[in-house]
Amino acid sequence: MTGSVLLQAIGLILAGILAGEEFIVRYGVQPALRTLDDRAHIQARVALVRTLRIVVPAVMLPTVAAAVAVLAVADGPGGAWRWAGFAALVAFLLCSFLGTVPINMKVIDWSADAPPADWRATVIRWQRIDVLRSSAAIAGFACFAAALAVQLA
Image 1 (tube, helix red, strand yellow):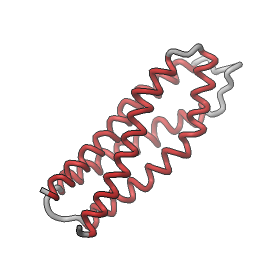
Image 2 (cartoon, helix red, strand yellow):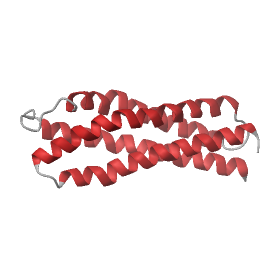
Image 3 (cartoon, rainbow, N blue to C red):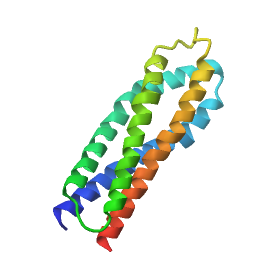
């Protein structure tokens, strides 16, 4: 196994972890939150933000670093897929840093006893951005998987 293929495999594993985490938040956690009463919903959302603000960057940053490293050293078949995967990661980062992160910085200070008047609208805005964000992470993983498959074929 060449160093380039090994690096791509590591990047693929990281992208898979990121995509899996985003998939679960989008399609598992968010629908579950909608079933809770307002107080429990706010408490759960604040708790999730407190945890995921550490977990997600811990996966996201190595994933992006691996993608950059792969682009720097990989050649041969699969290049278009590698670039498409990287573009998807860039979209994920933009949705995060320009969309969900600023919202999460406000959510973390919410009180379940006295939520802001517009908290439901804020949650809906977060969810809309997260559709793009999670889709970008999943698309990035799929592209990186295709790139490695083409490289190994």
